[in-house]
Length: 337
Image (cartoon, rainbow, N blue to C red):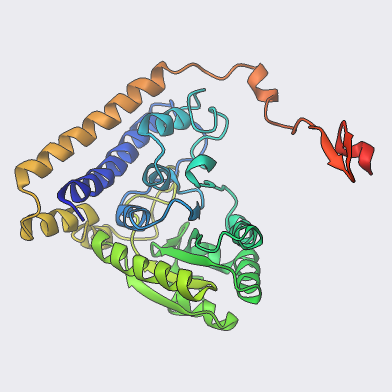
């Protein structure tokens, strides 16, 4: 990586952190409605994976998606506008926190129902196989709690039966909603669940962005070369509650404090300074620029117009388009039945 790439990666992680912190403030002020699931503590995962994802690789995730949206290339202004339910948001203000997406960037969401996006990921990969996109990998992110859902097992089973190019990634942040992993999962390591489908799998640490980047790059290359699905469990930690309404009575403050000592931004900062890639002053400048990016995003979002009542009725149905059936042009599909 060039120096500029290291600095961009560092700033990306800081922007995610600051954006989430400001989102929490705006939620408490009543400017963000619905649910809000923060990504604080898990920045190394999205930044590391996205730094080695190729343009042809599809990305799909669950509802803790703000960090993923930013790493996928969606502008912070657009993300903040969506959080505030404004028309300039990536889902035109009608999706909110859990429905960030931009298919032009091959980022397929942001899904609110636990585990429901996992079979969709298998479908995305199947589509690439049908279309001959042999160099494309679908990267599907989900939490540890989703691995106890039927969707998870259906998706993994079919991906192995059809030998689909999917990288299944469990972001194990230690808790599913308000329950510790070991109180809900029968296996000690989530990645072991892939064994039941004869799928190669492994577990890596997820607080060091360079480690995540190196390991995921290796696995993506393996999938491109050998084909077939692969499951990766990444150990990380969320510093905030499951969502904004979480009282966090299920874990003690000392546990959170211990994990905060392994802060992914701090780890990367030490790496950059220790390897003489950047100075403290240069990184302070990146911190300041990240603050500006987020503050500009908030100003943009607050100035963005609200969706109109008429907007509620847009994008509900697909308008019929002329199709051809056995050489005859038809006005719509119903006439060809």
